[in-house]
Image (tube, rainbow, N blue to C red; front, side):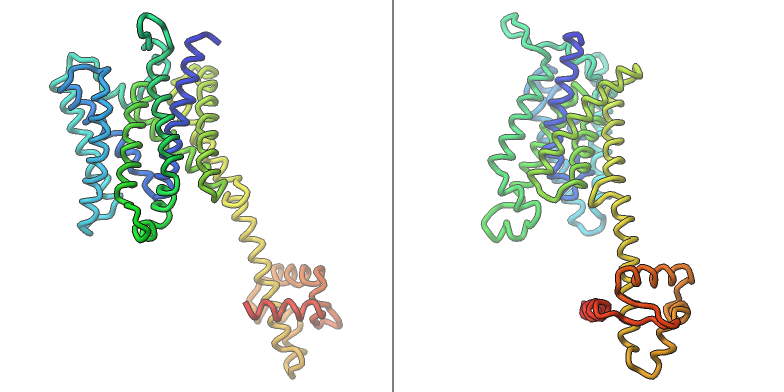
Length: 369
């Protein structure tokens, strides 16, 4: 690999790790759509800050983007608090309006400036190595790598320092308020971090990949674990793996790098959605199938126990009666009887189903549930 290719891969890995950390809390708070809104509306903050400082490399642009990100959150919450629209509707109203204002300002007032809405949206990580950080003439690597590395350190530090507050306000904001914490302050602090992370990644990857890396890996990790620290770690690892995999896929197909990375994120999510050991669709289908057979077997045992020793026992304990009484198809009823017999819960004698001692115990246990 050439030095430029190594730089591209390093930038992608750092961006993925930086985005996955705040993304995990957005997923848990049910605010995944907010990342999409913020990643678009911060463009307005960049444009307004640029008109003030007239310097695309000024840190004021990041500050302006962060402030507009917080403004987006405040406006969405103000609209949703009216009770007239839901939060997702409020997001759909606020972020197109702010983003459109930014596009209008760029097209009308910054036509001769290298500030392109298409570049901000789509990005081109392959160009990251050409914008170097060279203080005093010493080449220290791509600027994007330093910017996102600093943001990654900030995200890790904020998560470590305020982990208790973030965890408590995420899962139980009422308890957090009762204990003296400020859920609103933590909430807006998190949104500020999301805004800074989004705008920091714009120059390298564009807002579309920012959303993919901020939501996809944490959502994938959420399907694999219930523990927040594990989810954070898995989200970072999945994001980094998707970034690396997308880079090599782009090289193999000679395709757009950002698009390939987003594609790999989507593929990883679909695979985990299908194959996750506990929450995956395949595991869920198997569990539901087992529960269906277990429930049917318990119903059979309860039915036999209810009529055991009664005048109707002879009629109620016939295998063919199960089809009529339970309204089971013949094949299903035969399968239930077969599995119960194999488990030594019932016996079949002279066309009569009889409970075994073990079957009586399971019937009593099932009836008490």
